[in-house]
Image (cartoon, rainbow, N blue to C red; front, side):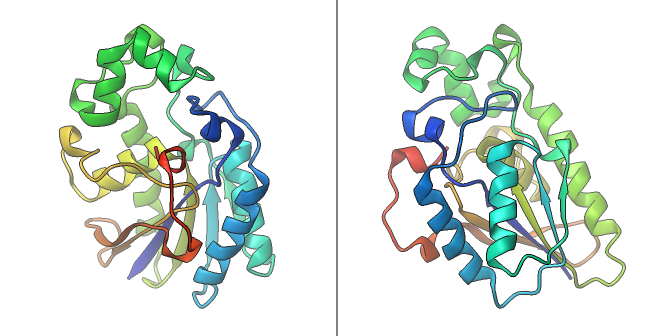
Length: 220
């Protein structure tokens, strides 16, 4: 059995300001996020992690590096563009409210029904493109786990993680967002017993270890 621990990066300045932060935009982690990452590390400490794979964007990489440091600093870390967030084109850096005013149908479909999402007006990336690059990467890791017992941490981004995880579980495009989004420093666990042919959900968007109430800016 191969186990994947999917982690959304720590909360950033743009997250707190309600701004779109895709594959091009980036903003620093908030000081409080480092404490959240420490709490996540305490939660994962009993588990032997074989490798951490992370998006190369700074908010994800710093989350991965900080997590490794809290876990002893000995876990191999690999950055890969396959785990980057959606390219949101001209929406990058815009506030949610401004984007919703300018592109109401596009934003609604992105958040509620991805089967109707057309990123052409914003020069962005489609769900199909994100799903292909992310799920192929995860399946390759599973197929190459000849021991059938490796544990991987995958640090990525809110929208990309939802698309990736739900697609690995066989959820249709229109239903990807039915369970909502991913919280900053939240943890979702999947297993595969057949080297990536099928995946099973163990826990969705767990934040219990953060020991605090979340607000609307914590989840996307």
